[in-house]
Image (cartoon, rainbow, N blue to C red; front, side, top):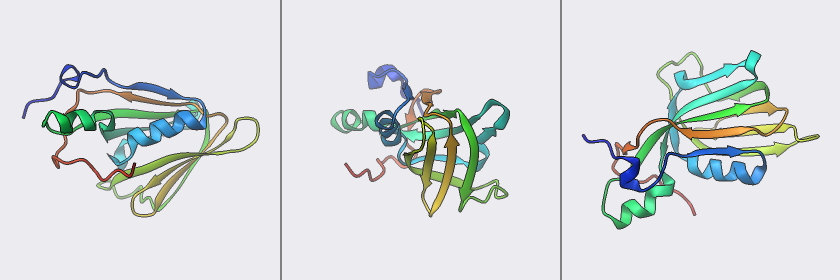
Length: 158
């Protein structure tokens, strides 16, 4: 199997930040249907950082792939949340090291003075809730795109 290149897709790797709810909505859209093993979820309380290493579908390339009749792509990406005060989850069995999760959405519930909660909704009724001092999120592609194993685009409501 040959890796696709960013040049082929005519797109540079994503490196986006979110500091408000509108920015976070863009990141949520780009990470919808991303999958990750539970082992690629990291919480570093001393750094106030929570991160996921995702295999995300390249939604930004979907139309170009369809028009050029070339395979749909995924890419490994880091989704990092800073200024995190605490992490809670439901429906996530941390002891099941083989569990693969699918991210449906990332939403912000504002609180006082820029603080609030970020809720990562997972397929199968799971959720991760981050209590944050401020909205500070980064999405960064860290590998070259590769052909989506299914060869198809996930269902993505517009």
